[in-house]
Amino acid sequence: MSVQEILADENELTHLLGAQQAVVLSTRVRLARNLEGFPFPGWAKPAHRKEIAERCIEALTQLSHFRKSHVFKMGDLPDLDRAVLVERHLVSKELASGKSGAAVISRDQTCSVMVNEEDHLRIQVVKAGWHLRGTWNIAEQLDDAIGATLGIAFSDQLGFLTACPTNVGTGLRASAMVHLPGLCLAGHIEKVTRALSQDGLAVRGWLGEGTEAAGNIFQISNQQTLGLSEDAILRHLGGWVKTLVDQEWNARRKVAQEEGERFVDRLSRSLGLLRHARLLTSAESMNMLSHLRLACDMGCLPEERRHVVDRLMIEGQPAHVQARQGAELDSDGRDRRRATAVREALRDFPEVGSPTA
Image (tube, rainbow, N blue to C red; front, side, top):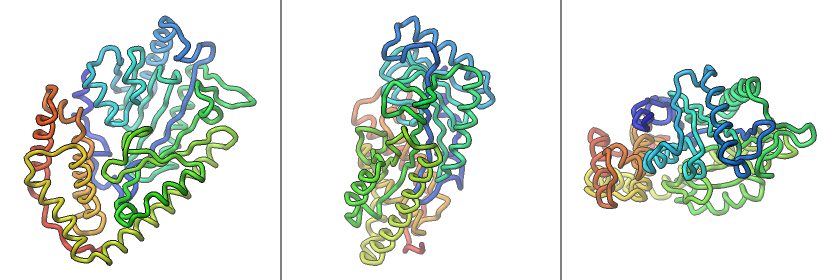
């Protein structure tokens, strides 16, 4: 099966008009689970890993969520295809770097399960915008369906058993991908991330752990899984995201008011450069697209153009650019192809106006 099918399928993160929201780009719930009677993947022999993959894939593809799904075995994919899946947040770098892992992905890319990553199963549900309870409900249904088919390792004392002690208990990681240009422009982002960290939340970049916050985008997630119920974890994250959204809007309005014409000029310059550039690096593209997303949120550009900006952020990543081209490209080739795609997508964008939000 080709990753080209992933690129061709429409999904709500990049195509569904109206699914996107101003500050929260997406909500994710991930559950770590392991099969009873098998060693964790890091300790399992190749024969065990193969048996685990076969059992899990067979069980998953029988579920209603994955009736018409994509099944990818990492050992069968070229490096470029694996990189596309990582950039889409459908698999982790850890899974993509190995040969014995696999991924089962729903057609709309909302649900995915990684097999033989750090744990036997990593169940993931992603929704555009801020829908924490709805995303959790889908993940819980999927977890129950998998548990009814496959025996899951569980301790009455500890909860769900996982390879890493930090995941023991609920095995739950809930996260929000947030766009915070206002707090970045106002110079408050370090103070905010420090407060989040002190209150038990992890702050990561666009592609998760060890990555930078390209385009003013941050991933906020819980760190503690043991000793807390799923509901307590979700309430803690939800409270902080609501606070972040309020702080971000306050920062945006304050920056827009204080800068006045300079604020509109900043956004207009980004649109102008994106419309006419012949070479665009990934970092340049993300930072200027961040300004366009801000413009859509603030009423400087039509709100219905926001999904175009979100799609360009995802499809402007290096592996996506090359996959669209159908060939590996050097740095200049990627920058050239990225600039062409952005120019074409923004050709009919109107001029940036004054903020109304």
